[in-house]
Image 1 (cartoon, helix red, strand yellow):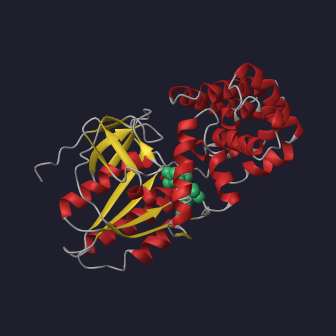
Image 2 (cartoon, rainbow, N blue to C red; image 1 turned 90 degrees about the horizontal axis):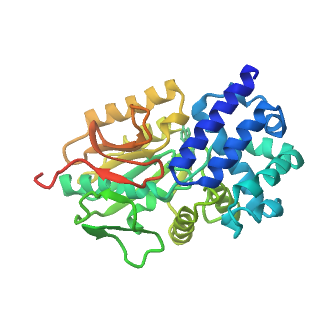
Image 3 (tube, rainbow, N blue to C red; image 1 turned 90 degrees about the vertical axis):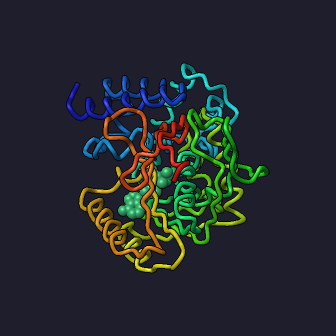
Length: 349
Ligand SMILES: C[S@@+](CC[C@H](N)C(=O)[O-])C[C@H]1O[C@@H](n2cnc3c(N)ncnc32)[C@H](O)[C@@H]1O
């Protein structure tokens, strides 16, 4: 197999493994079939040709699946909709594959154009992993929170305090919330804590307005089509955002933080946070973000402390993501915020 097709096939197969591990048999199988098709230089190659130059972290396989899903959701691909559970289809990968393949032939230029945009997910499930960190800061400081999210997409995780979290050991949040996490915890964080958010703001290079039709279509397209639980969480969060949108400014993360962290408010704890974001920033950009946060933390006064909370892939290359507060490992979770295992016990603090 030529090097370019081999590179792309490896990326599709790696994503297929992750989809299988994260319980998406439809996407796992479609991506495996797409990787096989690359070897034949068929329609998958015609759609992906040229993208092999991108870094692996640019999530090409997910962008391909997102582009096709978008055309299913907007009814362009009604034959494929019959096989996609998100549109009431049967979820059968073996009957879906030939229809998927034909869609790549019939809609090659639209799909290539959609591939040119970034991976614009906004995974509401990650709030279930982050909530323990916000509660930890409120518990340790006794202060109300100002939360600043970088790479916020549509800002749905900025609304974490409007969601309901339930574990075997306790619950937090509005019982009537349309976003309800009931299966996110293996070892839950302490949820018997108070927290008040008095300011929330985010930034993204390409913010999405979740209240608009175009915005909600874009967000829904990046949910894996056989994961109806994730889709329901997203739809619930969009409903909340329609009533109470979080401000997500179009800005680069380092510029945004430089400006916002210079505004210190007494008796407020500021939490800078991000999830599955750093892999999309180049090395120089990462260094700048880290420098801005470190400098602001160093010069923060005692009554306006600054914390850095994040959910990002771990160093070990395993499927588990790490939830860190400053240098401290609070817990781990899977990529979409499920399977949370809390490791820190701060009840004595
Ligand atoms: C995979 S999405 C994750 C979104 C959200 N944090 C979540 O967990 O659902 C990554 C986001 O980072 C944004 N992004 C990438 N580089 C950025 C930068 N330098 N400054 C601000 N946003 C950026 C992208 O536009 C995209 O919306």
